[in-house]
Amino acid sequence: MQFQLDNPLDGLHALPHDIWDAHIHIWDIAAFSEFEKWAEIYGVQKYTGIATPDVKRTLEQRDKADKFLFAYYLPIDAFARHDTQKLLTAVKEAKEYNYAMVKMWFGPRFLDFSNANKPFAISHPDFDPVYSFIEDNGLPIDIHVADPDIWYTQKYLDVKRYRTKRKAIDEFCTVLEHHPRLKVISVHFGSLPEPENIPLLSSLLDNYSNMYIDTASTKWIVRELGRNTHEARNFIIKYQKRILFASDIDLGWGNKTEDYYATRYWAQRLFWETDVTNVALPFTDEDNDKGSTKINGLHLPTSVLKNLYWRNALHFFSN
Ligand SMILES: [Zn+2]
Image 1 (cartoon, rainbow, N blue to C red):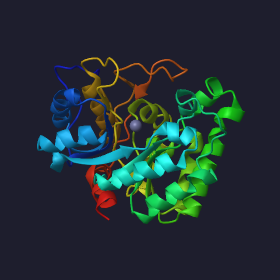
Image 2 (image 1 turned 45 degrees about the vertical axis):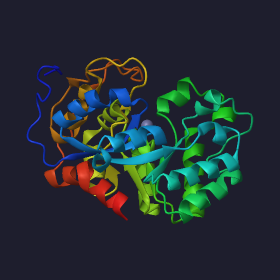
Image 3 (image 1 turned 90 degrees about the vertical axis):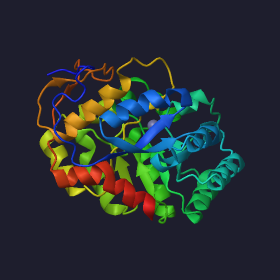
Image 4 (image 1 turned 120 degrees about the vertical axis):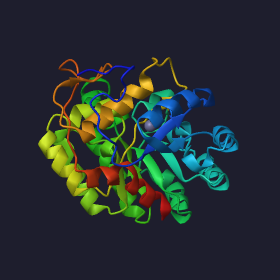
């Protein structure tokens, strides 16, 4: 089997429930109709979209309000420069514009994008008033804590600047300890989808009852969870109420191929719903040091899929 754009549902059976994609980025509204067409083919009917107030307003004016909740991207340069005031202003704006959550992105390379001149930690005391303000306003957080393990052996060799992955995870835990009412989605399976990290991820979910995880991004998740499907399947069944389906699809960023949207949704659905083995991931995975990534399906029970695809997002965002 291989992905074909003219047979986009190949290998998939009936969808057990509509899908809520809890993590997409909308950089440019022009890309929305093409995206929506493909999303609907795969049964994706609702989105949590990370978008500016302008983009949010435009979509709402186009009668898309009922399809969306929005996340406000807190400025990464303000974290890099420890600009507490700018961050507080941003959270205020998120509240004012009726955002459903705030997004924080701490992939270590953000320090380079924003010319950081101070040592960074997710739990740095300079950010404490920001977390408190978010907590007091009852805004959930979408947080990118760390990057794939492999990046720490290749890109982030300057440990003093970038920190180790374990240090980033520990900083995140410190924030959760200090702010027990914060509700968080730690994206990319808590940044810990690698089989070696699953015991740590379990202990975090056991310790922090307000912590959830999502299934973005497709290649990282399919590659790593697919290395031990038995363990991954058991983990997901055990934590089935704490995991939200998400793609991390970017609308209007970079030159994407025509099949970008379809291949992400096809690959994830095939992975969660079926028991296929060794199906080629239909796009390049430059992070796979063993060559190309294959899809080895988890064949999750229907009741679990319903939680991942819809109910967990509904529950997370309704209280
Ligand atoms: Zn993202």
